[in-house]
Length: 114
Image (cartoon, rainbow, N blue to C red; front, side, top):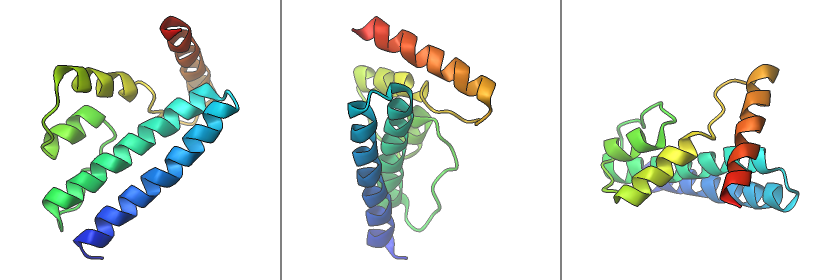
């Protein structure tokens, strides 16, 4: 895979996930919508990583702020804070008790913002 293929792979995957995100939002599955939104941003950042660092492999991290810093991608304070907020929607585990806490956090945050 060359540089343009690597960038295209990550961007295409982000676009596919964005469609899933839209569908989840329409169906009011907000917790999973937020989780997938995190994936969309992570994949877009990993595309930027390959644009700047190919052929070095991307960092195996999910923290959007750290990933942006390693690209390096200059962020405004607002953009940095946005990525910090979105980091809350990454679900590292798939255990039921973690999902329950995740749902509670998402519902609380959605109520807070409306």
